[in-house]
Image (tube, rainbow, N blue to C red; front, top):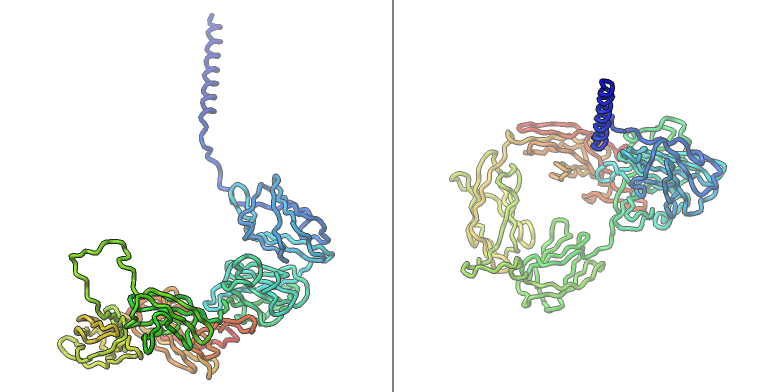
Length: 575
C-alpha cells in the first residue's frame, strides 16, 4: 500500500509539472534578446566576379551572408555609362539578381555604384558605397578623375548632382546626348569618376530635374569645365576634396586630376511679363522677369490719352506701379511691352472685390475717409548717419514742409527734407543724429496731398539714436589683389541676409558701425564686368559665373565692441 501511494505521488507531481510547462508555452513572453544588429551585409560571391572582363551574360548574381533588399534603388543606383532602361532586380534567398533589359555596349567597362541601396532585411543596415564593375571587352578600364562641386554663389558643397563625361565632344552635346560616364556627388560635394578609358572628355555637371541625364529644363542647374579633361591612372594617394586648389580648371599639385566645378543656373535673357495685378483701387502692379529698359503701357479700353498714369519703379526696376487717378471706368485692358521683347494684353478690374471676407459690414459704423498713408524705414531706433525715409502710398502732388517739425526735448531742429524720387513717393529726412538722443517727428494733417486727392492724417514718430555702448563695430582693412577692377563687399547676417554692401577698387578701410550683437560674415564678389552685381554663367558662351569668396572668419560681435581685421583678398585665379 505505501508503495502504491508513492507511485501516486510521483504521478501527481509529473502531471503538475506538465501542466505548468504547457501553461508557460501558451503564454510566451518577449525574449530579452541581445544587442541590436548593426553589421552591414557582406558579398560572399558574385557571378561573374567583380572586375571581370569579357562579360557576355544578361545578368549578374550577387550572393550575401544574410537576406538583403533594395532601398530607393531608383535614386541611389548610378550606372556608368548610363543605360536607357534601369536593370531589373529580384531577390532569391540570399541572392540579389540584376538582369539587364538592353544589350550592353561592346568593349565597354560598366560601373554600378549602389550608394546605400543594398540593406539587410532585418535592420536595414546599408552596404555603403558598394560598386560592381565588369568589362564587355578584354580590358578593364582603370583611369579616374575626382573633384568637388560647389554652389557658385555661396561656395557651399552640392550633393546628389550628376557629374558627366562625354566622349563625343561638341558644345551642344549636354542638350542632346546622354553622357558616356556618370557619377553622383556626395554630401561634401565630392565626386569620383572611375574605370575610365584614356581620352579627352567634356566635363559637365547637372542637377537633373527629370532624371533623363540631359540638360533640357530651364530650372536645371549646371557646371562645366572650360577645357577638355584627361583622366590618368590613380597611382598616388587621392587628394581630399577639402584640400583642393579652388581653381575651376587647374588641377591640384598632384598627378591625379582633381577639379572644382561651380554650379549655377543660367539666366533666361528673354524679357517676360510675370504678373499684372490690382494692388488697390486704381493702382496696378506690373512685375517683369528682368529690369525693364523701355516699358510701354498702351490702354485699349478705355482709350486713355495723355498722362493717364503715374509710373513708379522699385530699386531693381523689375516691378512697376501704375497709379491711375481718373480712369473713367471700373476695368482696364492694355498692352504691356518692354523694348520689343514682350507684348502682352492684360485686362484687370480697377476696383477690389467688395467685402472679400464675406462678412456683412456694420452699417452703424461709419466708413473711414480714404487718407494718404505713410510709413517709415525705422522701428524706434536709428543709426547715427542714417537717413530717415517716409514712404507714401501714392505719389505726392503738393507738400508743405512747414507743417512738419523735428524736436528733441523742447528744442526745435532744422533737418534737411527732400524727395529722392521723381514721382515723390519717398521723402528723406537727414540730420546728424546724436547717440542716445530721443527725437519726435510730427507730420501735421494735410501736410501732403496725393495724386488721388487724399491727404495724410496727423502723425507723430518717436525714435532715438543708437549708441556705441549697446552696439558693435567691425572694421575691415581690405587690400585688393588687382586695382582697376571692382570688388563688391557684403556684410551678411543670419542666414546670409544682406545687411550692407560697398564697392571698392583699391585698398580701403570699411567701417560697419552700430551693429546689433551677433554673428556676421564678410563676402566678396569679384565684379569682372563692373555692373555692381553678381552675374551667373553661360555654358554656350563658355562664361563661368563670377567668382565669390568669404573672409575666412565668422565674426561674433558683442555690445560695446570694436573689432578690427586685415583682409588680403585673394586673386580670383587662386580662389
